[in-house]
Amino acid sequence: MSHTIAAVSTGLSVSAIGIIRMTGDDCARIGSRVFTANSGKALSDAPNRQLILGVLKDREDRIIDHCCAIYTRAPHTYTGEDTVEFHCHGSPAVLAAGLESLYLAGAAPAKRGEFTKRAFLNGKLDLTQAEAVIDLIEADTADAAANAAGQVGGVLQRKLKPIYEDLRDLCSHFFAVLDYPDEDIEDFGLANYESTLKADARALHGILQTYGQGRILRQGVSAAIVGRPNVGKSSLLNALAGYDRVIVTEVAGTTRDTVEETVMLGCTRLRLIDTAGIRETDDRIEAMGVERSKEAIESADLVLFVCDGSQALTDDDRAIIDLCAEHEHAIALINKTDIGARVVPSDLPFMQVIEISAATGAGLDLLADAVDSMFAGDVPCDGSILTNARQYDACRRAYEAMLRALQALKQSQTPDLVLTDVEVAMEAMGEVTGTTVREDITARIFERFCVGK
Image (cartoon, rainbow, N blue to C red; front, side, top):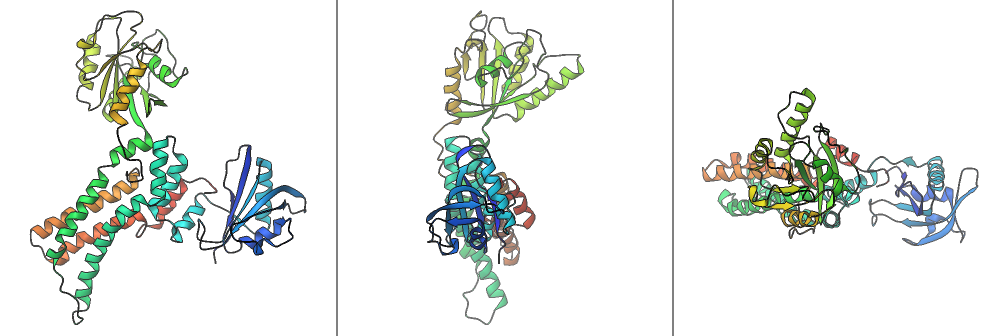
């Protein structure tokens, strides 16, 4: 038997409707202790998946709310267990009182992600689907939500499952021949599996190649705003954020550390990093900020180089240009075009140079178009993109093990040596879907969830 748990599965702020959810073998009996249907029938006798109007009461038999209950029987539920939900008016006080009443009636408080964890343990979801649930909850763009929804629906699972099954078949055939030599089992020949192993390695490599897009889809584009002091970097961040996120003064070196803000620019979500102005300085604290600015250039997906267009380029500007020159995605912004034009696009060795005014907003629409052209291409947000770092690491280890197995085949190594790497690959693939994942890993995964999901 699974013990019955309960939690509020909607937000704790005031809303029109709030839902209290229970799951477990005893949820109908516990629900009947606190809910009385207007029809007089017990909740355990309610029709499957039908809303029933009634009243929710506390331990002193006072009415907490006039609400609806729905009893859904296993196994056709989210968790695979009996489930009861109370659809109440969305007062936090009502939901808290209803939840307390259920606890007193015998339900236990649900832990973070425990509903989805039970769905995983009961075989309703594999681990890629379970992790996509929290990605869907946390999605802050339509594309991220669409990809997470596709993964909840099993798109990624269906791509990974055949690879795992091929590896399993290869291993099981080998050990069947080894353990049962007298049985009528087809002889094991590694050459027969070489083409399958190559095809699976190619398929897995294709999935791994989507991770760069997936990371940006999930986390946004990290964009470092760089330049010497007082060229308008903080003003640009404030203009894109739509409010005064960063202090702006005429004093050089005001920004002494990196400051981050997430914004939507066109169709692209940017994680803007306003860096300290890069220049030679004897100030120890400012120098630490300059070093962090240089590190931000190296780690960012996008570099936005800003110069003061009302002044001629300086040696500091040119030194920063050299730092940005090797970056794959870099855009030069000639700022302060509203007060002067001492710098023209041909002065800057960048593929894309845009004239802007952070003060007036001029040119920011062109910047949005340029960023979209770099990062908002035709990405299939259907669930086939790998967005999860844990899944990527496991797939990478599986792919590397498959390459080692293929290399051993090429060198005509004995089957047991080849199969060692195939088993490693299968173990890693099992970690992705949850077939072989360790308990401590699943615990960390479900800690990301909110209570009630």
